[in-house]
Amino acid sequence: MAHGMASLPCLILLREFGKKIHLMSSCLFSVDTAKKDIVFLLDGSDGTRNGFPAMLDFVKRVVEKLNVGPNNDRVSVVQYSRDAEIHFYLNTYTTRQDILDTVRGLRHRGGRPLNTGAALQYVRDNAFTNSSGSRRLQGVPQMLILLNGGRSFDNVDTPASALKQQGVYVIGIGTRNSDTRELQKISYDPSYTLSVSDFTDLPSAQEQLSSVMNTVLTRAPPVTPRKTGKKVTDFYFPRQPAGKDIVFLLDGSDGTRTGFPAVKDFVQRVVETLSVDDNKDRVSVVQYSKEPAAQFYLNTYTTKGDILDTVRGLRHKGGRPLNTGAALQYLRDNVFTASAGSRLQEGVPQVLVLISGGRSFDSVDAPASALKELGVLTFAIGTRSADSKELQKISHDPSYALTVSEFTDLPNVQQQLQSSVEAVVIEVSPESPPVPGMLTSMAPYRPDRYMICLTYTEARKISVKFV
Image 1 (spheres, rainbow, N blue to C red):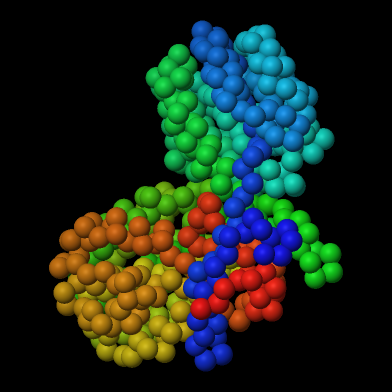
Image 2: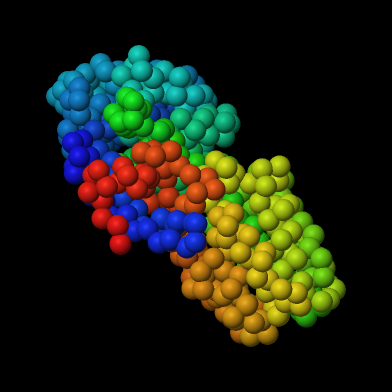
């Protein structure tokens, strides 16, 4: 390995098809998880007075596990109720003992109402900054641990989104008096939300918190490296495009009339699992028979509720014959486009879920290939009336074609579909080549792995094996 690259265990597998080269596997870039910046945001409102000592005890327990130091872990504590107040910044203390002593002496703030939204904006503007000791621009993971005992009086949507945009990983911990949905909205990912009955039960959540933190530590995404001449010198880590753009293509021909309610129910079930409200995931639905019709585009709705309401109200289109080929071409030209809300050019995975109940009257070959060329990951689900070979041809990979007996059996493949979507890998082609030496993310988002794209010459210099 060349100097400075020894920490990159690499195996690049290249397969050549004509003039196109596909990256079939990737170099693994291990993120340095030896240090992190952690801000604790504590609910100090009137309702948490009795539980505040348990809250402080929990903070101390977490800090005890950290490797505090100017070049290791840094800690800040902010308390809030109506207004937010910073007790100490990320660069105030450089030893664990100083932090523990200060936390031990904190007094409950009191006050009402509880303005969590304003507090989130406060930590974004005053705690996660260079002057306050944040090392975000140096690639150090930024974490916010919110301890909350009630529903916010103000709106949390905008400040929560702003923190995510800045790359701050928020973990929300609430009691039974908290609003679970609100905490899920605030957290970087809904799964980062933890619940306890009372603050005295916080120790029972410590192991779960540690697990989430470990997940976060491997998730700091890379950016374009800085270069000196042709040599990569530093790697920085801003936010990667999160989420995915999902288009549902529904067979609305005469033969699917009785099964259409089950198709809509399936779409709703899948949408329920997505992160739409914080703009991670976008959804579009297209129905087709002889001709396709977009029910709504990727940028039509920004809330899960609006999408579910619209899907619930969809009417069966009807008509024949079933022109799946024309529908696929329609998606490529009209839906997977920037004007329709597609974030393909931003590196967001493009997913198509086709639900079909019959064989196509027209040819699917050319449009299916065009979607693959564009980088769209197609999953096809068909009933026993569908042509399984045709579905395999349409799918990005034959293994992405799923079969059910009837549309009423769709719930049986929901988990398989979701697992497959999470496991997809985007192929990199010369049409949109990454800058040699640039770190780029892969889809699905693997928190512990990244792809480093090199030219053949550069790869040979660091003894990368080609097979």
